[in-house]
Amino acid sequence: MKVLNLGSLNIDKTYTVDHFAETGETIQATAYEEFCGGKGLNQSIALAKAGAHVFHAGCIGQDGAVLLETLEKAGVKTELVRKNHGPSGHAVIQVKRDGENKIIIFGGANSHVTPEYIDQVLKHFNRGDILLLQNEISNVPYAIEQAKEKGLTVVFNPSPMSSSIEHYNLLRTDYFILNEVEGRKLADTHTEDAQEILQELRKKYPKSIFVLTLGDKGSYYADESIMFHQEIFPSDVIDTTGAGDTFTGYFLAGIAHQRTPLEAMRYASLASSLSVSRHGASPSIPDRAEVCRKMDETKKVDK
Ligand code: RIB
Image 1 (tube, rainbow, N blue to C red):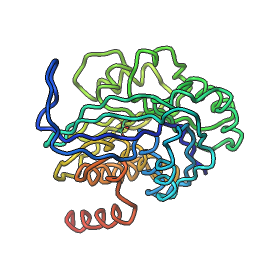
Image 2 (cartoon, rainbow, N blue to C red):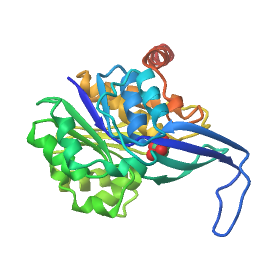
Image 3 (cartoon, rainbow, N blue to C red):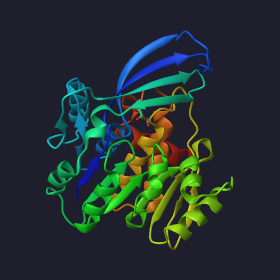
């Protein structure tokens, strides 16, 4: 089974700050680094590191060679990525000492994903393959429609959440992987209770499977027959950027390998806890050997 991730590729300009800049305030960063990122790229890297057979598709600009090299080094297939004129997408990220972040993205080449390009990409995939999408590229609804017509399993991470999502035909989505804020908006509810958010989501999209991540409160899995909670694996928090992407990639790799939802959630949770203990988005994603080693250690402690 192949996984196609049609997603964003960004250059992350990351500033370490003591506090987030307030309205009208100029602040001095204590460190500046550039990383490869984008929810798409991060999730492809997490999938590949978790052992999935993943193809990345999306658009880079003239400055995007480093994005391709980073994907390839992690084992992601990149022959479908298109190079456009103009700049690649980028993100301006403030990271505080407690690991929290604020992110601004500029679409750049990510905004030039056209229906014609999506058609060309989808020709390489067949019934039973998986399409993963986030909400950082253009023409997401078109990709969902066309992929379903071909019999692919559609997985949607509605991040960043935008008002345009209301107009997508999300009844055709097989899996949603989303955080609490996104879940609340998609369910159109104000409840703080994660199980109630999931109940509302399942009412709205009864055929879909949901994975709801809750930061340090863990995560939930819900489908038509089961709902369960997965605890976090505690770790020292340095930078939370890309933690959700790590979770998504590891969870989906588990599903692609036909692991049980319980196993897929457990590995995803452990992988994302390792990622928050390091700087950067894509560089913080652990490889499978490290995740399996840590999992064995936790099992020994459990006994
Ligand atoms: O999820 C983290 C990512 O969000 C960053 O890498 C940044 O590029 C933005 O897309």
